[in-house]
Image (cartoon, rainbow, N blue to C red; front, side, top):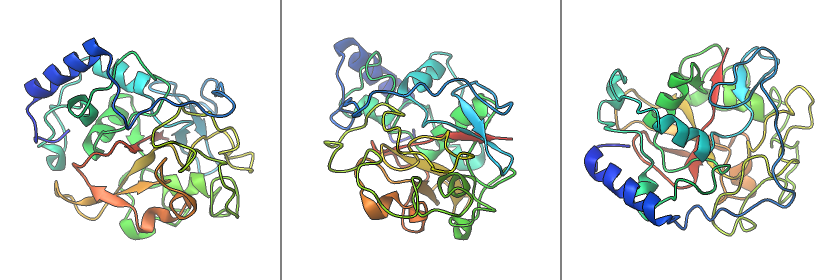
Length: 271
């Protein structure tokens, strides 16, 4: 979270929201048509810390689902420090989702839904704290903005497109409601992996859920190193439909590094 509110103010609002059990309208807690999928433990020698992962043909590991509210709140309970953030995140005074100050979340509710209302620096910090990285360039580091649709360069695009073969995570052609999108969403998130057809048809990539819809995902791909640089968000969200769910929709989707949105979360990668 940026310094638009002090840490003390935010923590106070967070505590009140938890006490009241209020959930902001952006996180309706709706459920998918088939119920959650048990994604199981990590595979391919990938770590389990902070979420189950799978190893892809490109050699890296990626979270099998978007980071959930439950996992993110568990990390917050450890009291992570804001010390040691890179210069572009110096203004990040805490890691609390901004929903805590704009209507409340209810910390004990909808823990299987993806976390939202976090900025790029929050996402980066969570991944780093779990020995991972915010998904970016294959092999590590930031992915140049112009390489958003290069499966040899972008970890996120390589995963969504099955190594550059598909336009959508589920194949070449758009099929409505394979993923959790508008208008089925009713304008709110759902539990991760509740749409088992929102995966790749290629077995080597099929263990990764929700690369289209639910929440869009921050990518380590920004147009500068400054605090106000714009960074790509990938995969579309519950607010999007066909065009927004394309694997290459990153060409038009980006936000300032310190901005937050109820429909933007993240997942992590590692080697």
